[in-house]
Image (cartoon, rainbow, N blue to C red):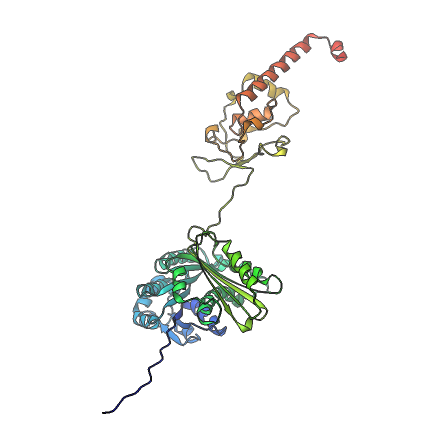
Length: 478
């Protein structure tokens, strides 16, 4: 009888993060991350272009549509890209096997990335893999057709990813200058993906005081919709605040705001000289930007290479509905809500009744179409008003016929400049300009103001009649 003594196999359990580059843009992003020595992730590239695939630095490569495209590319057709991914489904599943999290990066608007990326995302999601899409949108100079294809691809991809980050290539002009090369510009976009992956992997593999596990990452990023990623590095005085500001204001992302984010992942990395107060400053600066009820996952790690520096990485998720910039109406602008929309937007700017300079405002400034013919009813002026209008020739003359559109009526006008307490309004005779504005609904006055106007008007008429009965030489003695 023999004893079989064996040392138990030491199995190291750690999360597997895969970066999957699809198409030409995705393969280039993977190459940049490999060149930057990013650790903690495995890299896979998939392409219909055999020649481009050959130049990839990734060890794992998938030739998509070998029988469909013969290695010649998808020809900017998403349908061919989709069919090519279906043909290579077995290889795709093999390279996704064992992954806990996958970053799928591609360029939207072409054939391979637009068509194949949603197929790969669907396979990953069906196998329980946390799936994050990081994709780009075309430049404006690439045309409306390519942009339309990109939007359709984004809609399809969003169905199958937990979190989606969109980088419009047009935003590269916010960072580039006249000396920025074309290759350097695209590297800026790739750095967004690089920073996001590094921010996640550092929290799980780098030593630190506050480390996170993969379950924390999943809690923030699973089923969260649109997201934003940002990173910032700073040195010197106030380096923590400066790095946090840079992380939350990424100019490359698609008009994203952290306001309303449902989940936030914060990673603060520094050297041995990083202080407790600096960590507190950076974390609180980011916390101030998000909803108080957001799920905030915080981690802090050390990196000897960051001596004298602090790096702040942020992943904000669940920002759907907050990615469009809201237009705040100007305090002194009135928008006319026209029930029959025209091709031109019409505005009239009036002073606020509460402003000090409102009484000195010289005129109402109409910015309406000069070509519109008005059917304004002149009978709305009484004979008395008309006579006053003819007498006051020293005042500016306003041609309302060319200013007021036929569809604009007092009952349909609304103003953001209003008076909350009418008792605070200074009572004074109503000028011709005020009456003209009132007739088109731009301003209203109370019964008391109207009474003051009528009384002042009667007094003026009486004085004028009396002056007519007095000889001229006596009037001069007054």
